[in-house]
Amino acid sequence: MQQAAKKVYPGLLKLGSEYTGVCRDAAYESVPTIKRVRNALLRITN
Image (cartoon, rainbow, N blue to C red):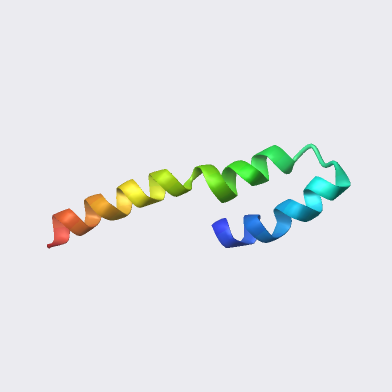
């Protein structure tokens, strides 16, 4: 989903869509959460 949101975001921005913010959140603000979950899973499974 993150990759798709990164691809769609520029188009929504050019169109002035009201969904631009939601798309940006999905593309960029989820990264720290994903990294924390990934690190926790790696600790648990190692």
